[in-house]
Image 1: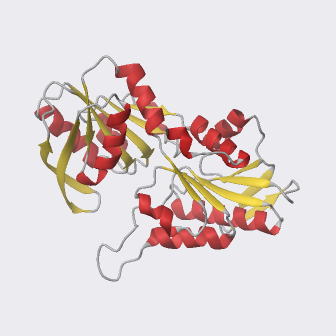
Image 2: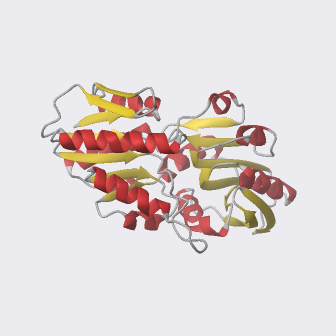
Image 3: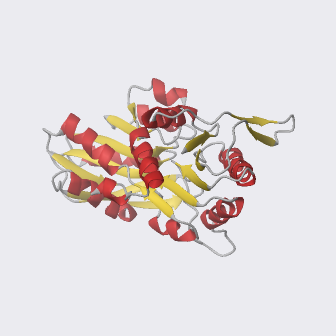
Length: 311
């Protein structure tokens, strides 16, 4: 087993390497003067089981291209098997045609990864489960719920907890977390989205009065939905509101929006390398997922069950 890291999230790659007790592959991933990406691997890769660690987060196109070139370099170096490890799978929100003459970019990215030479994909909390079907190679979708539930129980286990989905589409994810929290009750935020990145909370389905509410979602981009949902929950009597998010994209003014919101705390994983503003925020906490990814990588190498991680 060998680990090759791109530049998108080196702290996470090093944490995974530390968990597995392995060094990262000695390689150069750099730019030419015109920003073309150049990859050179300084170790023998022939017959090796390679894991390419790269989140396709901002700048999404640069990080995606970097990963594709690393996979191509490994394929041409006669690697035995190449697994693309994407803690955050970019373009996942474009998983269907919302209107005429629009792309299904998630499928295009899946094709690019496959054609570059990946034999397997490992990712965390895909935006939509059906994206696994976009790949014609084995794809493991890990869930951050066990890490989140353990954190919630250790910090808030003595409170009267209710799990809240920020929209109707996230009910399955919220129900799975609620089950891990001793079958906590469930509420749903009914919202109307006028355009991408802008949401308006309309109603709360469920009685949240007196509950410590846990908002759960896979992605926080502008954080507008979370902040509006927190305000609505507090207005309906919630004692406090925390949000647990797998992928903290937090673009633009998102961190400032969170700091000014009714959220007690926003907890994100390090699937995306957090910005300095997020690290410095008193309202944002980072939850490490290197042990989860490291254990999954170990099981893939040993040809043992990955799904049993979530039993």
